[in-house]
Image (cartoon, rainbow, N blue to C red):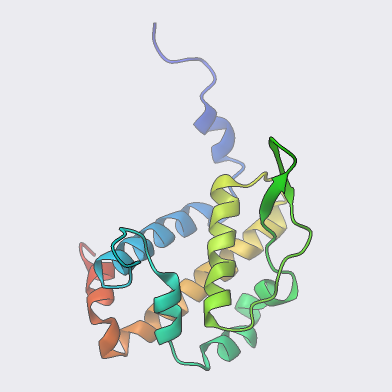
Length: 162
C-alpha cells in the first residue's frame, strides 16, 4: 500500500513558527528534568511548574518583565482555549498578564500548549514572538537554577546526555 502522497507533517512543518521546534524540544526536556529532579506533583508523574517557580528568586518576575526579550508575554500575553458549547472550543478573549513567577510559567505553558494544541491561524510574527519569549524565560530560569543548590537534581537531569 505504501505512504499516502500528501504527508501531514510536510504540510505543517512549514507552518510552525520560527523557534517552534526548539521550544518543543526545550520544554519537553524541562518537564522531564522537573519530574526527575524532584519537582513533580505528589504521587503523580507530572511536572510541578508551580514548585519550581516558587523556588526561583522573587525578583525573577521583575527581571523578566523588564526584558525586551519577554515583552510580548506582558504586553500581549497568550490566550487560551476554553469550552464553547457542548462540543466546541474558542479563545477566551481574556488573556492574563503574569504578576508572579507561577503565573509567568503558566504563560510559558500556554505558549507551548497553543503551539501544540491550539487553533493556530498561522500568525507567524506573533507566534514567533511568543515562542521566542517562552524560550527566553526557560533559558533564564535554567541559568538561575544552575546557581542554586536546591535545583541540583533538576540541573543534572537537564544536562544528562548533553
